[in-house]
Amino acid sequence: MYQGECELEGGVSMKDSSRLLSAALLALTLPWMGAAELSAQSGGPGFLFRTPTVSLGLRSGYSVPRAASEVFDFTREQLTVETSDFRSAYWGGELGIRVAPRVDVVLSVGSMRSTTPSEFRDWVDTDDLPIEQETRFTTTPVSLAAKYFLADRGRSVGRFAWIPQRMSPYVGGGVGLVWHSFVQQGDFVDFETFDIFTSTIRSDGVATQVHGMAGLDVSLNKSLYLTGEARYGWAKGRLENSFFEDFDDMDLAGVQLTFGVSVRF
Image (cartoon, rainbow, N blue to C red; front, top):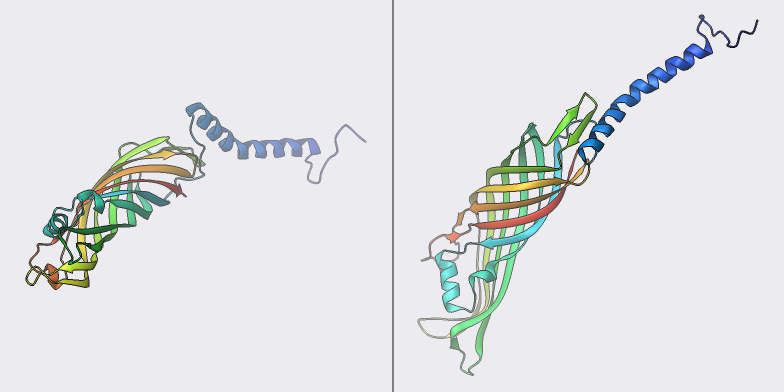
């Protein structure tokens, strides 16, 4: 006899089945609702389903070499080159691995290159024309560093969601290698014979580097964030050309100011 609901096999009614289905759906959506509500209350940028462990980023900015060794002194004294001419744009990228709640290990690579046309300050050729050349200074650092975040970068909501903080300041330091190249190409004066000759004077090498850094991550959403960073590196590179044999090692120290975007996952 029909009694307002039909019985399924095993004695479970369609009404009971509907209730079970509703309960299951509610259990599945509660974590979403809770995390979304917390994110809305805190003004946060959303949430991930787990704590992120990897980040990839691109960086651009400005490199300011100290340029304090004899090869730079000689260049500034003889040629119309200033310390500011060795400054250049910076481009790079980094891979970060989360190893602790507030610590990342970061592998980074970058490149800087300045190109400066010049002429001798106190010498001209036999036609009273300037003696011209070009100086190129290039560095390519590759480093491994540790970042320590001064506060938690996010918080977990149960087992289902991780909400990033809007801002995460950090400090850190690391070691690495820096490939360097110093090239002068054009016309030069032989100070013994006073002849003018055309040549390319080049020194390439690799040196060890240490650096310290401080920066700030700013979350845009659950996956993307911006980074601003200041870094200072210390390194000295040997000059490998006989023209520079009486000079001390090249000063490769300097500041990098960078800005970039990263993705966490």
